[in-house]
Figure 1 (cartoon, rainbow, N blue to C red):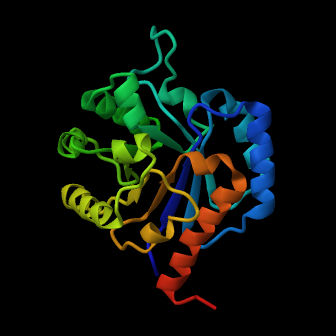
Figure 2: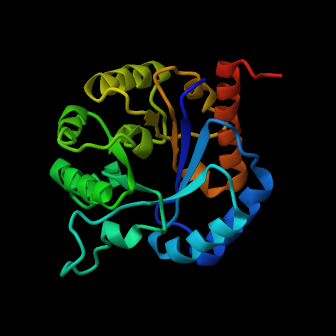
Length: 241
């Protein structure tokens, strides 16, 4: 029996409510659940309430929603913030520490740790993003957080900005390093992934899945990527036709 694998789709600052529902409607018609694969989609914040209800009505097996960010503070006098308690019941997961949050919003590793603590206390499952060359300090900041359901997403900044994925060999090396620091945590890779190049990564034993950005905006491309990860699961379990 293989461990669970994950495909996370991060829509970033794209799609309003109507477009988001259209995406899920098309996705539901294309995707067939795969045993051992958890699909996680992170829409924009404004979509979460109506989309949570819509996705529940679709009854998609092994498909969950994630928030793209969360406040490092609890509920209270924090203008513009969305506390973890407010996301509870709308999503199962929350993305924390994405390189774009660090770069454009100047978030620190301590901010990431505080967000982690808030998310875990609210019962949300954190998807914590790690990049280079700061991986060690970012990982160390998580040492005091006790969460068995944490997913670590490795996404090198260069792969996102230059739109060129990091080599599978380098990804495998970094994933191995992350696992040595935080053992028993699934590690997924993200950075310029598209249906025509994910095959180089889904077969890496050091990875437990993929973190997809631009390709997740098109349901057909996203389903294609999910199916490729699903094929790797079937191959590992010997369930290939």
